[in-house]
Length: 288
Image (cartoon, rainbow, N blue to C red; front, side, top):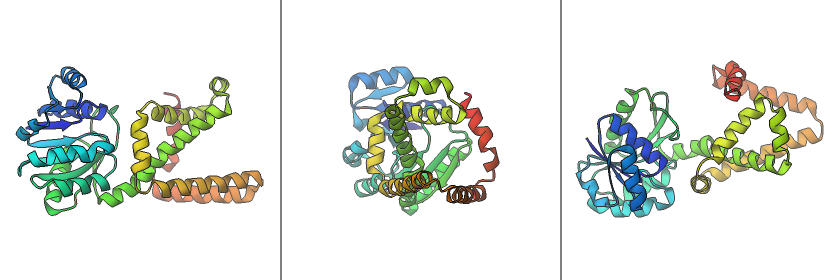
């Protein structure tokens, strides 16, 4: 099957190109910059071009571009798609991209998808995917994609774009926000070198999360923070709770602190049957 990846020069686009090539697909990477596009093609050993019209020969088209460039790309793509094509976007946000595809793409079946992992993954086995169909044809395509991925060990959830974005405000947005704010706090505290010499496993686990976020593209993280529809709500809840816990510590209100922490533990235990393994898991993470 012929597959075109628009934005295939990025890290996730390259990952998908390699994965699909290993699955036997005839992959073409489509990029904007001639030099980086040619280099990506050489690295992956696949066709590469800056000509978007080459998608006309593909059965599937995957859009792997920055959210800020998404509408511009879809506008260029829409007039040249055909009825038998599947057009799948893999942005980390779903309401806006799905609405844009539904508005512009008349021929072909569009589908919102989100691989909830990064290009460091070794394969799809054990990884999470979210599919967000909004019509009967899209639902049918989603079932085909789900079957393909599940056969390869992936975990696939189908939900609305709205539900996806509400969840991602915490799963991605809040996790990244906490990491960036924590990084800023450590730098402002001014003892990075000293802390490295006496760090424990809890600190190493925090540092691993911080460094994994800081090592990524700041433009991508800024785009996520500023485009996730429910990000303001998640940040507001977090900041409110940070103030609450800070006040408990400042007032030395041990009883309220302990009671609240016990209540939180109970809620997490009820939702996670493996909660008791968390401490051991942290040690494995921190000792890597």
